[in-house]
Length: 452
Image (cartoon, rainbow, N blue to C red):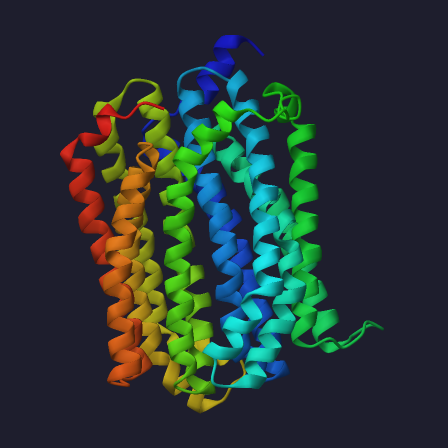
């Protein structure tokens, strides 16, 4: 392959075709785990409503650490995309190698917190001690998948940042097939496997994460991507590159961590409203993830393409690109929101929880569908800020809106004890606030002075 061909592959275009070429594989890679999560929750729902309720606490807790990994990888992706746009492929492997070191360090911290600190917090925060003990037992198993998850997530930064998102799907499919199969075998104790119930889902997830990591790195090796960017030839610690990664990634890590921590706070308040409310909200989290997958894929695309364009010196094309991506994202979200409003009963009945569950879930599902519309454009503008390399601005935006979010949910759910439907309207405040602040920042043009 000639140098010219490699360079042209590393630089992005701004047509709808280029956007979709990058976004669609990312969407599939995001959607498959969400379908996997639905299957997991269906199995646990049929096993017991108590398990379905507990998974909301454990799911959001683990999501905190997963989002820390996403924050790290978003920063690395921004750097890789910038180097790709600048035609500096040799530096991509160096950045990737530093990311591996940092991922293992954060995973070790996450395991320590889960084993020695989280149990005390959960026992004191939850009113139902049976759910608390189930959650603690689950997390003590589940957290050992964190190193595999972080290294697996690195593939996003590499493949999206170098315009190779088409290779994302292989690892995701492998992970999902293993997870669904082992969920069934280990939760219910089928085909000679022990019946582990809730903890069976934890073990299945660890094995699936390892499988996904293994498969995606086979793909990277077989496609010559590892050799092309010398990914495993630059594993020496570099203070310079580690500092650069931390300067971009740390604000994103804090941003995503506080976002999910606030969601954990939300679910703890929901738990005070009873097992049914918690079970309904667990399903809403899954619905939110499925419906938002396409928009999040467009958001990841926006971040990478904005960074790449800036690396090419085409700053004037950034805002027109963002508007194109917003139109695509909102169009898809509108169709999905319409479908979920037309057939809410169909979505909720699959959990086998009875008519009281469905009646409680329908109004919440309608609120979530509106949230998806708001998310579809606000997340694009927020990730565009990330793509400019101004991750500290992203953190400031997140902090400002999270404060409003937490005040709202505390007053609604804990002080006034209103319904969880009104509590879920907190998502409207969150996404509208993120959009306004991100839009104002991008329009100001202050990001044009940033150099990575």
